[in-house]
Image (cartoon, rainbow, N blue to C red):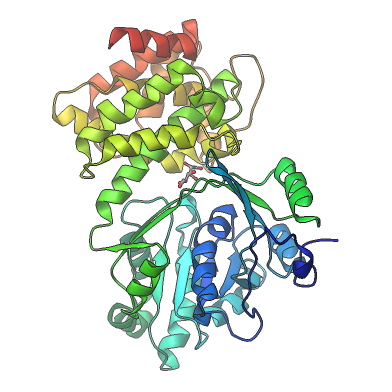
Length: 467
Ligand code: CS2
């Protein structure tokens, strides 16, 4: 027996499940990108609003790429358990906000119709960095066009991906994809829809067999969609909504609604995600499987603390960065999360641009050192070899995998040429970093140390050098 509407009443009393009617109302939110993150983050915020009696926050969840997951969720009536666990304790919860599902690739018309449904008030997106394609823009435009033609109200379209200025990026993508015939819909969109920027934060690793087994034990029924997360969560969203009353509502559920998302976005992308990418690549190359195994290694922990404190923080507008850094180190060490380094290393080519270059450029502008980022970049170069320091091969899971592997392949014999070729890529490093010979020289230095002595020895050397 699996978790479902029918088995919900059999769950142990200690497990908090939805007490509201999940069948009487149409969803008010269409969510694109039905991965683990959304289900353990926004879906739980909307679950709170539904529990408070506001029935407009049910979700029509759209799987962009994984019909298997959508099928499993359907078989469980959109229900799944979330284990919230860290030093403060372990508890299980079954959020009930996911009411309907579709698969974008095979049910495109249903998705367009959902966006254009009179009851829809929001579209939220977690489609990952590489998901911002003309196809995505076309899908949204088709839905919005129907709304405009039908005389329906505008909606809030909220990008929740780890991109700086994500709302602006999404709106610009739609405009770039619009054809001359779309002039009316674009004018309507500008006047009636809102594209707030937002920063979302909660560590939600991809599900594992281990978490499914733990769910079975805790629930007494099977759950093929169970997830594991931490108690920390943050959602900061720009005060810009199609329905201005939504700001106060979200705030009542613990969301921070502000005019200044930027300072939260940049701190999160460069501190949390920047450290994540550095640790993920170090873990992949040294054979440490999880983020917790990396941060639990004293020299990696010191490296990460110094990366954040010395090279990232000086360029942030968020002033409480020291507390933020300390909280992050704690979160990275959460033993319950088992966050795979290879999961985070996935799509590194799409993640590095937001996470590292702004801090390096900030340091350069002040004549300050950027050794930690240079070492991290050198680990990235080493990572493109596709084999760890114990000789274990791994796959590069990245839209640029082919070109990265080709550029990095000869690095053992032609280090200079390979490092230079990888550092010349503007898609990874931006337009200005590749022009700085001093940056290239420092990456080359650390790359040489890594090839000769290994990643761990290189980190220890850096720590000793800049005590
Ligand atoms: C991670 C993020 O996979 C990754 O790239 O850095 O998913 C990270 O766990 C979240 O942004 C935390 O909020």
